[in-house]
Image 1: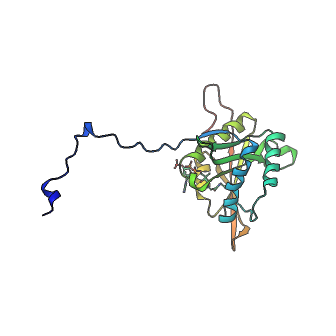
Image 2: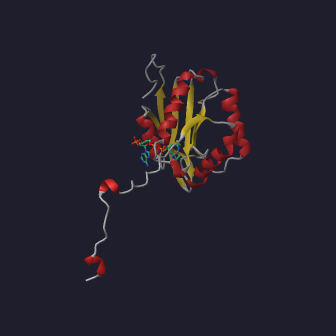
Image 3: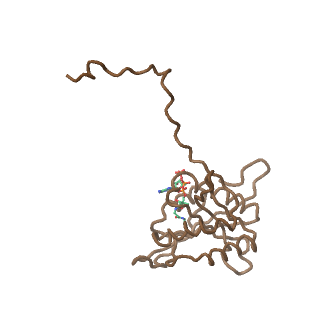
Length: 203
Ligand SMILES: CC(C)(COP(=O)(O)OP(=O)(O)OC[C@H]1O[C@@H](n2cnc3c(N)ncnc32)[C@H](O)[C@@H]1OP(=O)(O)O)[C@@H](O)C(=O)NCCC(=O)NCCS
């Protein structure tokens, strides 16, 4: 028999034991994006360009292209563009809306986009970003939001939009070809309604 079996290690009673280290809290805040966030957002987006079918872009977006999109959405259209940020300033993800189509009568309808860095997914950040986006879009007078989502590889996005009351309004088959296979898009739509005073706008 081993010596330690004769002398089992003494353990302090529960009330005298030091508290176990606290689980790290996954903290983040949501704020309007600024032009300084563009390189980080570009890196997140280009990860999905290279590694997924959630975007149908095949070539990495350039900094110039991202800057020009940002200026158009934020400075010219005054639409919301938001980021989720860690307490130390790391960008976890972003969301924005763009006009659904250019023709004037579509002016109350937008398409949403949302991308999180891969390590930040599955922790509730997408839900928080989308909620804030929908609230701000409502405030901006937008009436309809459309999500155009790949029908393969974007299950989280489809589930999240459904959770927020987006309903499927169409499915276009084989409209994209990436990584050697045909892809379709699921179209989902949500109508925004201004909240009565003291109530939440959405969901
Ligand atoms: C889609 C995305 C924005 C969702 O954000 P997220 O922070 O990962 O999601 P959350 O943790 O907030 O969860 C929101 C809901 O999405 C769904 N969801 C999240 N991860 C999922 C997964 N792996 N599979 C299926 N559903 C999932 C669930 O319905 C979840 O709600 P619940 O936790 O109450 O059940 C994020 O995963 C992402 O950036 N994915 C890659 C890029 C992308 O697909 N962008 C959308 C292009 S259309």
